[in-house]
Amino acid sequence: MPDIHVSAAVIVDEDRRVLVVRKHDTTRFMQPGGKPEPGESAAQTLVRELEEELGIRLDERKLTPLGTFVSAAANEPGHRVVAAAFAATIDPASVRVQAELAELRWISPADVPTLPLAPLSLEHLLPLAWPELRAQGT
Image 1 (cartoon, helix red, strand yellow):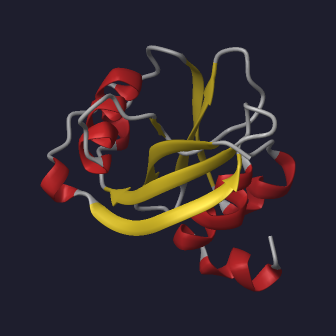
Image 2 (cartoon, rainbow, N blue to C red; image 1 turned 135 degrees about the horizontal axis):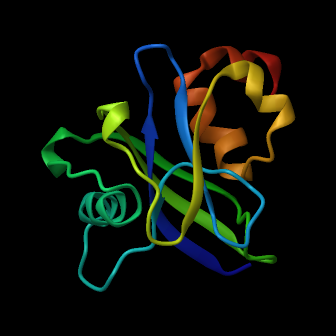
């Protein structure tokens, strides 16, 4: 199964809501981020993608590495996504949808059963923000 390498941000607000986004012509929500350009580190990729997609300017030194996670790709059948994940803190009021994004949502654990989410989000990234999901087997 071919791999798609990405960087992803787990962004949690003061109310423990997590930011997820949905790209145009897709149905599943996922953490913001994207694919690297040649020569970029995982952190550099994430900083660039957050600025392009959400208008957020972050210093890569403010990103907290969370690990590398592998799941089935949400939008590319027959592929795996290999994600370098980082925690980031932002001002929720500064976020705006742009580039290839169709929408964003701040979600709580109660939204998980009713929202179409990417496998990477369900299996790995949301449980980092909400450990109770891992205990429930979500």
